[in-house]
Each structure stands twice: as structure tokens, then as C-alpha cells.
Image 1 (tube, rainbow, N blue to C red):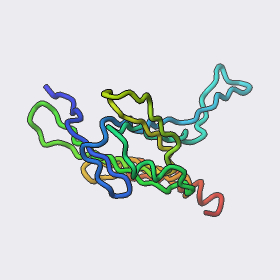
Image 2 (cartoon, helix red, strand yellow):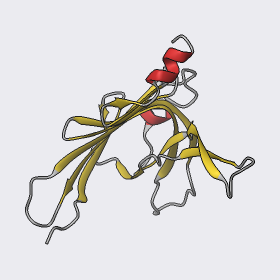
Image 3 (cartoon, rainbow, N blue to C red):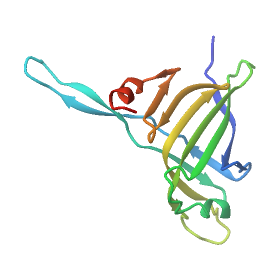
Amino acid sequence: MALPKKLKAFNLFQDGDNYRGEVVEIALPKLSRKMEDYRAGGMNGPIEIDQGQEKISLEWTCGGIMRAVLEKYGVTKHDGVQLRFAGAYQAEEGTRPDSVEVVVRGRHKEIDFGSAKPGDDTAFKVSTSCSYYKLSINGATIIEIDFINMVEIVNGQDLLADLRTAIGL
């Protein structure tokens, strides 16, 4: 019987800085398509028309105050901050773990300091709005999305290549 691979360990890097022991939780980006209902004459019901990728964001929680994160707030470039999640996913059958890497580029949209109370946890949350996303497993790129360059690669196939050609890019 096969068992699912579960996250056993992870780390986060911001612009190459190693945050080992400082980031306690990450909500990896949700990938979602923007769909629009379409129904015309002769159709018995609507179908959803794919209008492209919805916005991408990464949410993460720091264990305490982290100056390097705060210094990146207000970056004006759409891809001014790079974050790299490195995770090890392993099944309970003693198999070798899969190396899962998510790289995003964007900027910190929100920093939530939460409550301040002496003797309590001082974690704060960061929301990073992304213009670039890449998911790799064991070094192989599975999904790559680059909003600015109109690139969307899934399993080696560039889904937007024909559209770029059609508009002269």
C-alpha cells in the first residue's frame, strides 16, 4: 500500500537570506483560474471560459520580529522581493524525500504584527503579492507562471506561446 508524501521539513529564503528557525508557517500560493460563464444560442447550459490565472500570493508567519523582512516593505518593483520555499516531502515507507521548491517574486503587500503582550508569542504575518511563480519537484520544473512576460508553462508546455505570437510578442 502506498502512503502519501507529507511535509517533513521546510525552510524559507528571502533574496538569498536563510530564515532557518525564524519562519514558523507558510501558506503556499493557491493556483486558480479566472473563469467566466458563457452561454449562447443553441447551448443547453453555460460553459466556463478560461480567462487566465488569478492573482497569486504567498502568506507566511515569522516567529518574531525580523528586520530584513520589514526593510522590504514598500518595494516599488513588481518583482522586488524573491522568496524561495524549500520543502522535503516524504512517505512513511522510508522512501527518499522529494525536494519541492516554490520560488516567487513580488512584493510584501501586508504585514500584520498582531497583538503585543509581554510574555506572549510575538509572531507576525506577511502577505506577499506575486508576479512570478515556479514550482519544481526534485529539480524538474512542473509549473512556471510569469505574468509580466506572459509565460505559463505546465509540465514543459508553454500554454501561452501561441497567444504571445498572435499579439507580436
